[in-house]
Image (cartoon, rainbow, N blue to C red; front, side, top):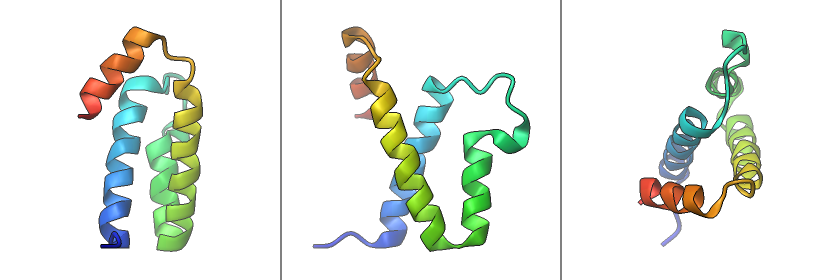
Amino acid sequence: MPRQPKIEYAQLRKFFEFYVARYVNVSGLPPEAHPIARLKLLEEKGKGIARVGLRHAINDCIEESIRLGPADARKLDIELS
């Protein structure tokens, strides 16, 4: 059964919020540059553009997670379960 776009987007957004809160250093960023604030701006522009932007952001999260050590990777797996 194919996923419904609204449900998929909501799940991806939850993951992004989770990852940003735990693994992205946002200290020193002005509020408008915070990743979640940037995503909200995309959402205001349109669902399609927000979906594309969110997918790019999650790809960046995955690329960044390569830097995690084994213990941190296991911790992330557990937290996501």
